[in-house]
Length: 227
Ligand code: UTP
Image (cartoon, rainbow, N blue to C red; front, top):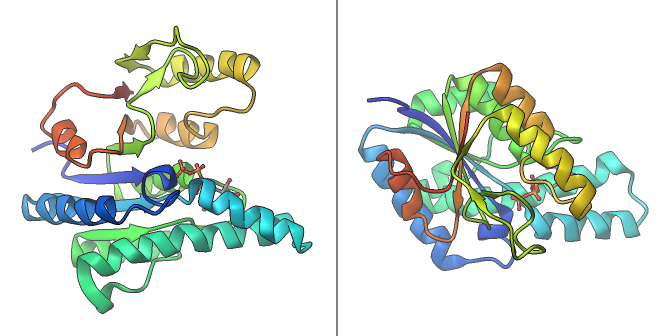
């Protein structure tokens, strides 16, 4: 079967802000099932708005940017740890802090859950780096939107969902969006660069329903495919 080694990037917006116990449990269940079907999975959990709250707190006490990022990374790792413990109990309590550990753990366990890696990036970039490192050809991004739109759908009623686009189309769209809607970013541009260079495909789906992961892997056309 195609794409047996995959990276799943779960938005902080989906599981962390606000914390969603039901969803964390259903994701654990879906990952267990995917593992049983033979998939090898790296899950990268983001910190989202929750991480940004802590970045603000770190700023307010006078910490430097790199130090603020370390705090945000800890937030993403905390949610990664909750999911990891739910999957594997105390033996799975440690969240990898390097790509080398990710590949070792993936070979050993078949599922790895991680958060951020180092200051100055986002978990989109971590997911792209992890995919490239472990040789995954697909990243599924489960986020707070059901795909990529022509404009920010939260701000523009006439925004339309795009079913499929290239990385170049996406970069162009984000350039337009930057002028129209301020700082809204669909996918971190650094992540796009890594994905394009390594020919890794990304599918963006709504994270509110973990079953979407199963649909995507069955080849159903949901969300937005970027390749
Ligand atoms: P996230 O990747 O957690 O936020 O990074 P996001 O993209 O808004 O998350 P989702 O889509 O809701 O999950 C938040 C911030 O944490 C720091 C950066 O400051 C980043 O902007 N961070 C995160 C790092 O410095 N390094 C990392 O590896 C991850």
